[in-house]
Figure (tube, rainbow, N blue to C red):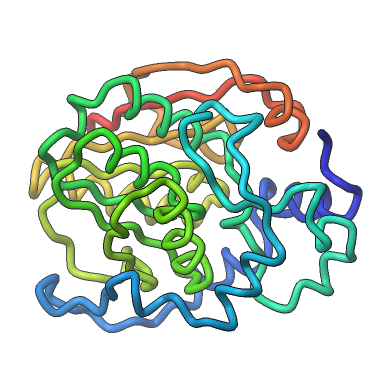
Length: 266
């Protein structure tokens, strides 16, 4: 089903890389932490009872209309009250975590279909959102996972989504990873993060450092946004998999038809 006019404006707003998330990334002033002292939290600390109740009341549990019907998620759907309300009535930061974006869908599908990519390995999911890609990594046997999203409400949503899928919740970090000292990961995954030119430049440099210092493998999911397809990172990518998007996802993403997983090879 297509988005309501109000929330179509929100997703178009997000797809065109404006608003709260970009502002948060640009204005972050977190200090540098050695990884061993990084301020990540276990998932239990995210389950504020009032916020948990709010999320459960105002999202729908669904596994329909995506590339990963194996994964249940709490998302904003037409059955939800705020789907039909004016977007400015949503009482918290813009709920980017409440949409299962197409880049994340492609990454999640790829990890589920190719569990050897993550089995027994450490995985960092940057811009985790609803947590689907981290959940797919967990389902596929990843040994250690960190989900990163700058929105604390996303952290709560990720915790709830782990529980929906009968998984022990994994750690969640709600600081800007780009401002923290890097650590060794076997795999870094990021979906739908190249939506803004400045952020794309920062990510590109950060990922290059990961690769050259730690030989980290990097997988990127993106449906072909111009900020990604026109970025110089394109010269350092190898296509791993391409997926045709389900019709509901196409309708919710301005007619985008495919989503691709790329491996970053600088």
